[in-house]
Amino acid sequence: MNDKPTLLGAIAAALLIPAALLIPAAPAHANGPVVAEGTFKPWQDGAVAVTHDQTLAPTGSRARVVIGSFDEKTVAILTVSGLLPNRVYGSHAHVKSCGPKPADSGVHYQNVEDPNANGGMSMDAKYANPRNEMWLDFTTDKNGNATQVSMVDWTFRKGKAGSIVVHEKKTDTTDGNAGMAGARVACLSVPH
Image (tube, rainbow, N blue to C red; front, top):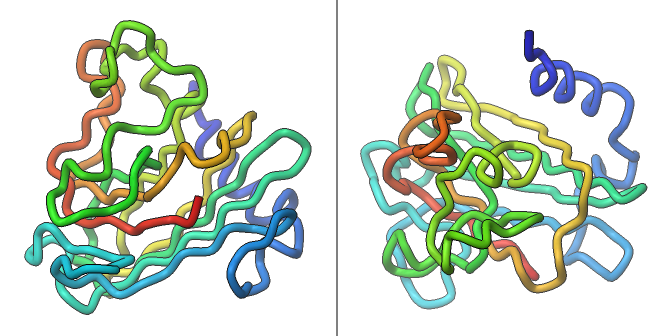
């Protein structure tokens, strides 16, 4: 039985998240959390939040992520609003910032990189899993809102994670398709 992700979210939300991570912050500093937020709209220069599919991530929907590290662990809290109601979305940390094309955000960030991926997307469940990548899959409520908490036992390498990408479906965990979650529907750039 694998209740760890559900229990982890509840425990992190109730007990483990340092108070500093819950306080809205100005731009991140060296010892504080990283905060990124924006309203999804079609690409334009300097965009922080981009919709690549206005049906699944309507213009005007929003996202906010707070990422903090403590005791060699990383906690990410993703909050979305205005997406489609009662729908499952996949979501992961990617290595590059958002761009005009969905693929511009690059591959998933991995703590231990898949040596066989050759710079491409890993689908090997040994590497593409919620312990080695930051997965933030969520299900929206009747108003299209959701909050997801994820905690991993590592910290991001400086400058190596650039966005949180929202995908069209729940993340696959089967070997050979691990980490796949369909099309990239929206992207939120994260300072790095």
